[in-house]
Image 1 (spheres, helix red, strand yellow):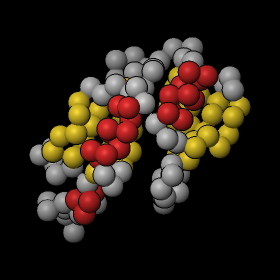
Image 2: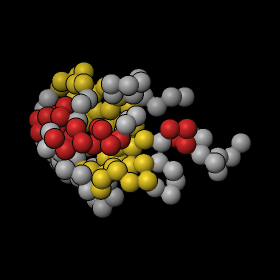
Image 3: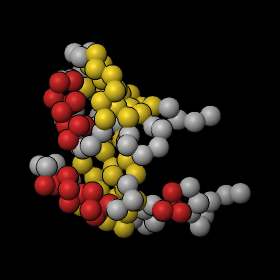
Image 4: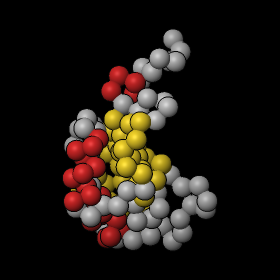
Length: 125
């Protein structure tokens, strides 16, 4: 099996679409005001947004977007007005991550992991 897509809830798809386009994702399905789908520029992954009346309670959704040069990507996004909760930081699990929230409070992690993405030193065989 391969992960095809993740769907995130949104209270305002029109604003959310603009936000994700600003992050650099390509809008491939525009069924506003109820649904929108994006493709990642690298690989085959997609994700979508769907309109909801209420967001999940307490625990939201986290989505990870991988990039080759995290510092460069974060600096480009800051210049576009994107606000980060945490700038790039090396984590104990050997991934370098930056954190931000989308307009609906979903946790976004932009990261770089290299070989440790799927093959950390503690991987079980």
